[in-house]
Image 1 (tube, rainbow, N blue to C red):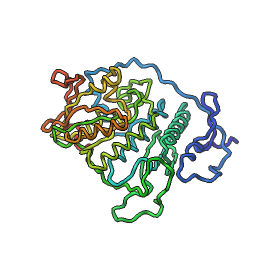
Image 2: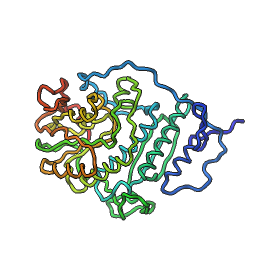
Image 3: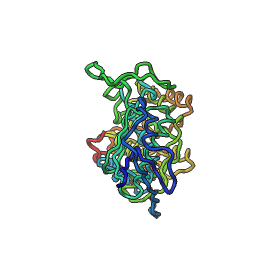
Image 4: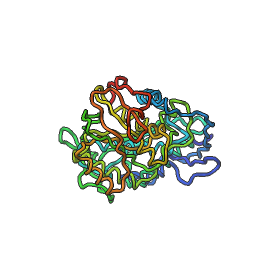
Length: 386
């Protein structure tokens, strides 16, 4: 009778190569409260699998179709997206980054080092390539968490359609009743970026929608200096393009610097509105930030030039973790100085457009009428989004 297998505790042989660590071993080393020596109910037989390469694609993204692409990504944001198995490692790192950035907007007093992560995988191990992708996901996630100097509060794996959810919280979260849950104890850790008694509220410190002030600035800050690529993105899934390369989210030190500066700006009330650039990329985030009666006029020309004439579609839809901030014109010099002090690349991409129900995107330096893309992205289609 064959021995049973375990997603977490089995050994893995991928493409004929025996992996040194089990998924459980990699994740246990990231836990804030490591378990004892005995895990699982082994012994388990090894899981043998192979990576599945993407079939070649001849799909060509067209700049004049940006409006249609945005509709596609917004439609997938409203539903359940497919986990991009060929990019399991990079996508897992990106989802950790998104979860951490989502916490930036919350009230309370905390820093990056105060945050703990909860991760939950649901996985179908039957098709060829799925278990190789699971191992890649865990390996990528564990490596990125370690590089960030963070810890896991918990992790779990369940059978089901392949997916990964990540949540970030402080060791003690603020309770509206003023009471603390008994199991939410403060964990003192030797981390470079932490506070003595961190607390995260359950409400946002700043709104996630545009404020209708035309003189305000919209600032885009990517939290990783990697190249803009579409592999594993909502746009790639929506168009069936099978883009062969995903953004490689790997510079943990840069992420830490970005997080700390932006968190301080939020906590000090400098940020009037802010949103995470995550699923769907920059344009999808900006679209979700807009409201009826307040759109935006933006130019991505500074980003195009900074990334060696990168293609606009990649910049607008690549899922490189980052933020869009709305700040008052009077605070621009202060924000500029804070970001330059930490050597953080940022891009002033435009202004809110009160009285307009559209986002107008330019690729020209002057952001004039002649540079506006043909597609005017109407705000009415996003009512109810936040």
